Structure formats: structure tokens, C-alpha cells
Length: 227
Image (cartoon, rainbow, N blue to C red; front, side, top):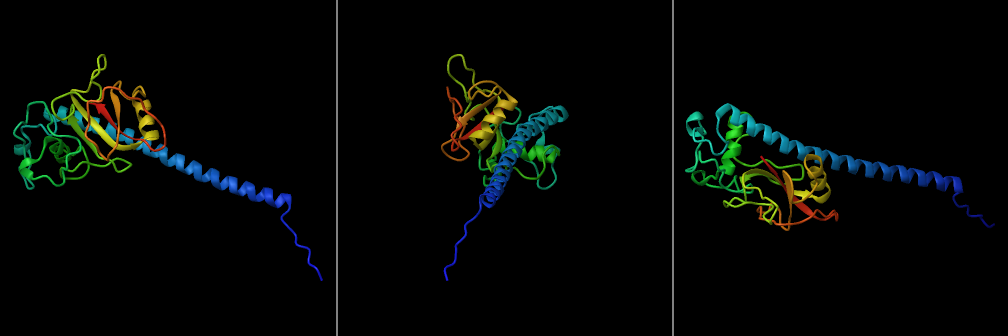
């Protein structure tokens, strides 16, 4: 006796394809929702640190990290410290200083920034270590390029950041472009938010003269915003 082998009907195949399409659509939609949440988180980081900075200035008439009265204001253990250059209007150090490992006596002002904001209650947590953004990049501050020169825009006609800036590192291209567009002009070396293409994690901020964003799916950027 021969058995007739039956295949799937067109209706059955169509139902399977519809189910696969719905599953793929749900996965892609979920990924897009995660990306949008990360974008909002990065934007909130910039806004939150800015608000904390201005709140500290309003209360103490000093820049966090560069506050000459911090050591006497918070004298209880663990005692606050002040750097040798406190009160000069410059937050020394770089946003990516290894704040969790530096010796107390050599703590740069970019680390003291977080310690003093936390002691004042403007930022959650304790200690001098920088927080991380939604993609595990360092969120930190510095003045200019950290060496007394301007950063991110030094070509003729393009002014660089010479004052205090907040930087968020390790941002995938889609997130970096969206954040710059939402908060500023979407141009890499222009406005109050500027970007730098990364080749290493949490890189130093350079005197980049030119550049444009490229959404390749693999590019990673550091964004800095002028305070």
C-alpha cells in the first residue's frame, strides 16, 4: 500500500508567515523602544547634571569641585577635601579621570565635583566616582580640553569649548545623533552640544576642528554639552 504524502496548504503557510511577521515586528518594535528609552536617559543625564550644577551655585555661590569652602562645610567623616586650586573658577582634571582609584591627596577637581554635589544632596550616591550613562559610558565634567585649551571646535570660525562642559561617552551613533538633534542643532562640531568620534572607550576630549556624524551602525561617539 502506498501512502500519499501531504504537504501544507496555502492557507496554513500563510498563517505561519503572518505569525512570523508579527513576531519579527514585535522584536523590532521592542528594540526601537529600548533605543528611545536610552536616548531619553542620556538627555535626562545632561539636564539633570546641569540642574544640579546651577542649584549648587545658587546655594553656595561656588562651583562644585572648585569650592574653596567644601573642606570646612562638610567636616564630618568622611571629611571633604579641597584641591590646591579651589576657587579659581576652573575645574581641573578630565571627565574620564579614574576617580575611584586616585589617592585622596591627589583627587582632581573633576572627581571632587561629584563628591560635593552628593554631599549637598543634588546627586544620588556617595563618593567621588563618576556615574555611568545608559550604555555604560562615563558621565563627567571638565573645563575645556582639560589642559587649559579649547576642545571640540578650534578651526577658524568655529569656536571651541573653553569653559565647563559635561561629557557622556560610548554613545552608539543612532543615540548620539538623536541626542544632539533633540538638544541642539544635530551638527557634530557646532552649537552647545558637540560630538567626537571614538576609537577607544571613554576617550580624552580633543581639539577636534571638523567632523560630521555618520550613522553606520558601528560608530561610537562622545557628546559634550557646554554648561
